[in-house]
Amino acid sequence: MRVTIITAFPEFFRDFLSTSIIGRAVETGLINVNLINLREYGFGNYRQIDDYSFGGDGMVLMAEPLSKALEKAREGHQGVDTVVYPSPQGAMLTQEMVESLASREHVIIICGHYEGIDERFAGKCVDLEVSIGDYVLTGGEIPAMAIIDAMARLVPNVVGRGGAVEEDSFFRGMLDFPHYTRPALWEGDQVPPVLISGNEKEIDKWRKQQSVQRTLRRRPDLLSRANIASYLEKGVYL
Ligand code: 6GU
Image 1 (spheres, rainbow, N blue to C red):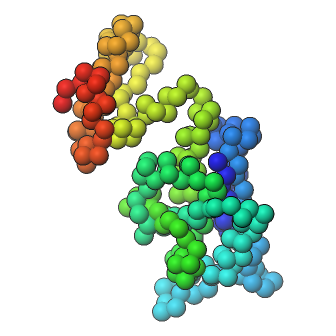
Image 2 (cartoon, rainbow, N blue to C red):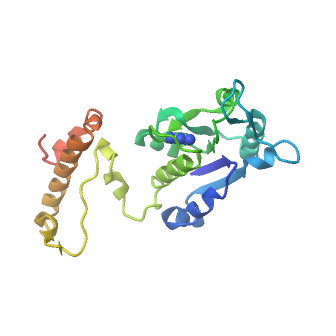
């Protein structure tokens, strides 16, 4: 997985790329992430990257610095790339989209700020405009981290469990089941006895039932797309 981030605020990413699971994946070369400072492609002594929105209302990142930064991102790689622009106007990011992005050779993420980026650059260069939810953030950096994090955990060996990624939330379109750890009794509250029964088949069935129940109660909208057949195999009856 190769990702290039174009941002006016590369410092946002320093801790993200050196901490915990993502930090280890970067350090061990499982994922390759490059930062391009948009400011370096700005105009004049002030390295200007934004200007007033025509018609009024705030600042917009100019097309030319973005275009030069994109050229830099592509330098030495004439291979196929996918340019992603996080914005509240984008299509809602789904696990399916993350899976598709994770399979691309090179993902370039453009972080907007202020009122966004010049629409002519977006029209010419952006392959995918994505939102991470119906709320407004100050910039595309946090969405970029969300996209990279979600992609990275699909790369083999980034998440250190034998293929457990496949059992997570949204695999088969269902929410995850509840998890418990020690102690087995906490403030008078026992963990569900089946989980300490040692009966793997019963544990698996209980977990599938919990997934279905939770999805039905919390996110019924997911059920129409869920792979219900795989649940019926496990003896979970809807
Ligand atoms: Cl992708 N960007 C910004 N700026 N705000 C958002 C968003 C993206 N998704 C939800 N809110």
